[in-house]
Amino acid sequence: MLSVWLVLVSCMDFLLYSSAEEGLEFPSFDGKDRVLNVNERNYKKALKKYDMMCLLFHEPLPSDKELQQQFHMREMVLELAAQVLEDKDIGFGLLDSHKDAKVAKKLGLEEEGSIYVFKDERVIEFDGELSADTLVEFLLDLLEDPVELISNPMEQRAFERMDEDIRLIGYFKGENSEHYKAFQVTAEKFQPYVKFFATFDKGVAKQLTLKMNEIDFYEPFMDEPVTIPDKPNTEEEIVDFVNQHRRPTLRKLRAEDMFETWEDDMDGIHIVAFAEEEDPDGYEFLEILKEVARDNTKNPDLSIVWIDPDEFPLLTTYWEKTFKVDLFRPQIGVVNVTDADSVWLNMPNDEALPSAEELEDWIEDVLSGKVNTEDDDDDDDDDDDDDIDDDSSDEDHYGDDDDDDD
Image (cartoon, rainbow, N blue to C red; front, side):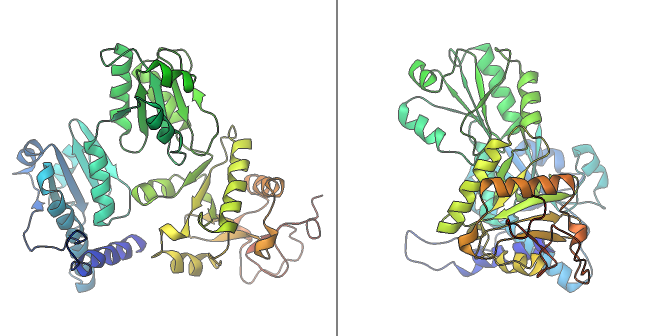
């Protein structure tokens, strides 16, 4: 339901903001149908016609009028994207999961409601917010070269500031290097979710402490990269390394891959932190989170999802109602992804943000199961639970005065 609601609001944004001064004119649907109804008769032709093909794999059109409207709004997202990208050689289509089940099986489509992008021999699932602007950005990223070259100090500084992204950078002799070509092929497999960079410049390589044919892997928010061992690396070695290290210790929820992130839970739960980066208290709390993540980056059981409420204004009220927290203040808690049940660390006021040590103690309690969402019960008045604040059944309290663990 959440994803459907996001589609409705995002589509309305495009429909409403269509009138503006020249130079700031938002696109509005021009009435021309560009999205194909893909079936067994035309799917091969459609895939050959375009450099990329974007398919919405949908359930049969429902008889309920409200559900029909929701479906048409999803279709409108594709129509708007197709209109904006009309000159980019990208096709858009709808594929019915029941009428064209044979086609779906041939193409390897499984999840109803998902968007799949066909590019060369790859099938990439779009796991972001189903809005026209997010989809357009995703497709434009796929059109770019899978490896971006870093050739000078300015580009190097820009690379170093991309601390929210998983990224790799390698130093190679040149474009004809067999090791660079293996790096390129690997980059195509992870595009656009993992960023790949390369340099042929000796000075840039020296600043990044890279040796010839060496590849460094940068986890989000970490100060230092990890070097892939046993250079030069084959395509298989790079793929295996990325897959083993792809879940960061601290990762940001982003519109372009929000559902992929949310589905990548740890045994049915997420440790979720809300913090507005532009807010002084939110920034301070985020820095504490980064410190904790850096100190625990080798713990495979720890992964914190950071959400900046400013980047999801349409979801703020939903999250506050669902989790019963005030998102104008930093928050951290445990969320059960099955039923959205949650337990939150009690931070009485903005002046009492937990230290890195206190936050680590609480996280240890979460990972050990001492703090868990099963204790979050409105009618549970168990006073013997040391991890739950006496004044609130859904908030964990930290601090020397109330913590019996010391």
